[in-house]
Structures are given as structure tokens and as C-alpha cells.
Image (tube, rainbow, N blue to C red; front, side):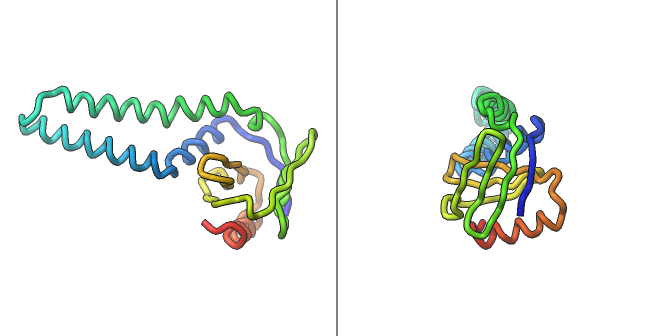
Length: 157
């Protein structure tokens, strides 16, 4: 099954946000900062602590959200020339082939460690930090369904 695509900046940035949200370390960090903020708010409300810990929790939460929601996705988009190109990807039984007008690359299915699906992309991971996103835009619904089945069969979630 073959799919030709290019990337839209806003959708790529949203897809990169999903990548960060899926990371276990980020999930743990979000939980810890939220727990700290809630506990400090409750203790501040009951007048057991001064306002500084509550303020610190609020500032940490704000910095974390700005970093993961704006700064990192935009910097990744700016650094990667990949998102400004047009590609054709071919999902075959033995391998995945990605090509454009400058060349092609072949990946055996074993190269992928996992995948997940976000609203606009299929995220194909090589390892915890290296991934490739395949836009769903322009892909017929039956092809999406067939691709989900192939990814589940070859990679697993």
C-alpha cells in the first residue's frame, strides 16, 4: 500500500505534542508537578504553609506547559528539514520504503519498536526518541484501516 504526502506545519506541531505526551518520563513529570501543585494549594488554603511553595508549584506547571506545548514542538519543526518535503511511503509485507525526489530509504519491520496513532498521524518509532510520522490526510479510510492492521501485525502497539 502506497501513500504520497507532505506535511502541514500546525498538524506536525500537534503531532510532536502527542509524541511528548506519550513519553513516560513526561507523564511522570506532569503527574508529580500536578500533585505538588494540588498539595501545596490545599496546604496554603488551610494556612499550613506560606505562599511560596504554592507559587513555586504554579510556576513549575506553567514552565512545563510552555516548554512541552510550545517551545519544544516549534524547535523540532524548525530544525527538521523533513517536514518541508514531499514523500511517498510504501508499506509492503517485508519492509517500509520512504522515497522522495532525492532518494529513498528502506526499513525492515524489525527496525520499528512501536507505533501509535494520533488524530492526524501514524507515529512509527525506531526507539524511544527516534520516530517518523505519516500523515493520515489524503489517506482513504479503508487504507487507514488496512494500515492499522498491518502495523499491529508487524510492530504491535
